Length: 502
Ligand code: MG
Image 1: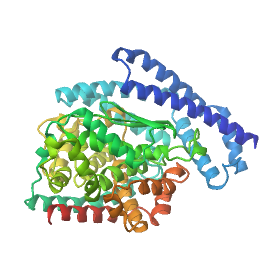
Image 2 (image 1 turned 180 degrees about the horizontal axis):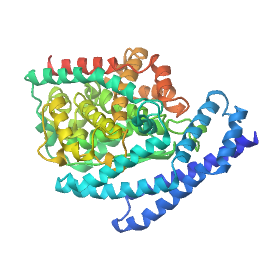
Image 3 (image 1 turned 135 degrees about the vertical axis):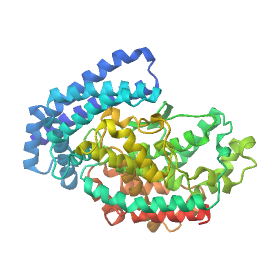
Image 4 (image 1 turned 180 degrees about the vertical axis):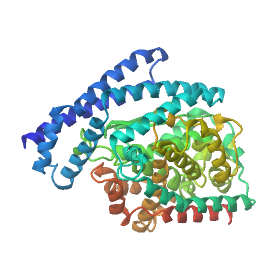
């Protein structure tokens, strides 16, 4: 049992260092004055160096190997929790030791240069300013995949970082299932002749009322303000230092109501996950979601399946009109609902609706796989991008800033990240279907303003387990079957048939 105690202590200290890194990062994105950036970069690099050293040193590896031989640890780390903890620790250690320190430094340097040049390239809408740094990053990511190892394709090794257990082939098979139905549904919606009045949402909505309304919704969702807070930042995100200290951010645009409203609900969904982790998992590798997709399933379930639904607004629309009587007093609930579910082909992924969003992801996934496998080179990206936009969405951006340069992910070297957004969406629809089976009166309850039963069910079935089970197994335990994209197709087809009178 000594090995287990050693292991737990080392993991707890590592978790503390990682929490400190997250706190410095949260501060940088919310409160830090601009001139603090220089010193902050050193602080973060030092702590990251310490964390990496502790993850790869012999003390942790020895304790891990001995604990693996022993099997069970001290309570509660027996049975499934012991298996999960050893699996997650082994996974983190393996990934870290397989990458030589000099390679990690080279990748970090290349990413920070690429991030800078991406910023300049996007501002000037000139891909050539980014192309060289991107090509170098793609090359480094191919090398990373070789270090990590893979069976079928180097992309597997990169995808596995964000969605453990998921393969490129399985992801491609799932995306193919939703590709044509999404294109067909988009066509049917465009031919329906129903045109939402989006002008409803772009009136002037004062920040204070928007902020207050968002807090009311968070409260109703069951967000615990004693264990979390909301601040503003240019890019909304959720971070957590323990289940009892979870931070979310949002941004408020006075002329674009949905940004803060749905941003808050989205991050609130992420936050409920973090607040719902079982306390005994705190300071261990189990105190997190098993994958980015599973985390995203919670934000999307709240934002889209709940937050953009008719029952939700049956309760909340009178409250919204009370907050904004001059802007919404004469707007019907039906017109508002249609406006927040406006489906149309658009250039920008983060502004896309539920129907077209996955087409943006399919585009990125196909390009990423081709880049990493060497079938496509960085200098061919803008053309390949525009060709796929025409194919999938029927539109072509005039500027690279609205096309291939729009996302930050590739400049960070985050290849394999995009598919987790769609996997999360598909998980969310499958989980919501299970919720409806358990609570047949689900919609009536939401229409009465009751959201807490959703949080309780999600907490019990998903949140509290952290990373004890991998995503696929967790999904099977919650819904009774492996990932099945049909739930998403049924959900969007039913929802939008009703909204657009198809
Ligand atoms: Mg998210």
